[in-house]
Length: 326
Image 1 (tube, rainbow, N blue to C red):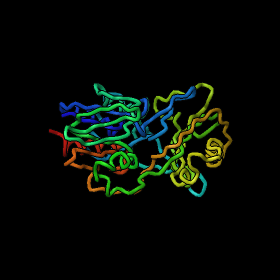
Image 2: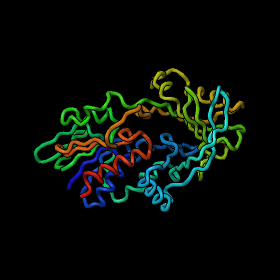
Image 3: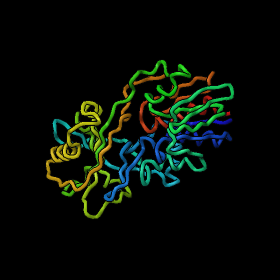
Image 4: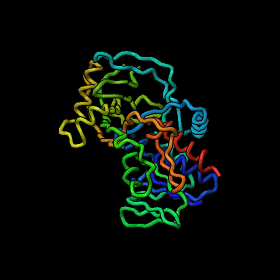
C-alpha cells in the first residue's frame, strides 16, 4: 500500500513509522526544514531552546511502553523536580507525584528516534489534495505533483486540515471552526541569583508556564549566563496581544519573572516565537482520530486526543491499529 502523510510532528512520524514497519510505502511531506512540529527547538549562542512542549507525561500503558523504548535508546530522560505555582502574585511550592519526561538532548529527539529509514520531503508545503480514481493526488505550493497514493493521512492543526480537505471530504464537519489558541513563547538568558529548587512554575493569567531550562538534565548553557528560561504566555493573553503586538515581550517576561521571584535579574539575550496553533480548546471526539474510510483518508494529531504529547502518539497509534494494521 502506498501512503501519503502530511506533517512530520510526533503524530505524523509515529504513523509513518508504524506503516513502514508493516511493509507499506510511505512518503512524508513537511513544510518546514526539520521534524518535530510542536516539539520544535531553536539553537542560540547561549543555549538550545525547546520552544514548544517543555516536558511530557505517560499515563496510557501502550505509551508507557514506547517511553521505555525511548529511554533505552537514550532519547528520553526524567526531569525530576518539584514544581512551584503562583498564588496571589507569590511563588509557592506545589509538589506533586507526577513523573515528567523530556527529550534528550531536546524534545524533538522523540521524533528523530522514530524517523530512521523514512522518506521525508522537507520544505514541501502541500496546498491542494484531490481523490482520483487512481488514488490521492497532492500538489505543493511550488507546483510539484505527487500522485497514486492509496491512503492519505493528514497530521496538521485542525484549522489547516479543514482548509486542505474541505473540497474532498466531510471528515471535518463536526470539528469546531477554531480548535487552537495561540501562545507567545519567550526564551531568555539571565544573570542573577535564583533559588536552586525553582525549576518549573505554573503561572497566572499572564504567563501560564515557566521552565528553567538550565536546570534540565544535560542542558548546556553559555558560560556567561546564570540561567536560561522558557516562558509560555497564557493563550488568552497571547490572543489578546496578537502576533503584531507593539508590547515588548522580552521586557514583559523579565518583569514578570523578577516580580514573582522578588529579585533583580539581568537579561543578556532573548528569543521569541508566536505559536499560532499552540493550545487546544476543550474538544472531545469519539476516537483520537478522524476517518473517512470510503475515501481512504485519516486525520490525526494531538488536537484529536486532548492536546498533550501523549495524545499525539496515541492518535497515530490507535488510527494504525484500528484501521491500517494489515
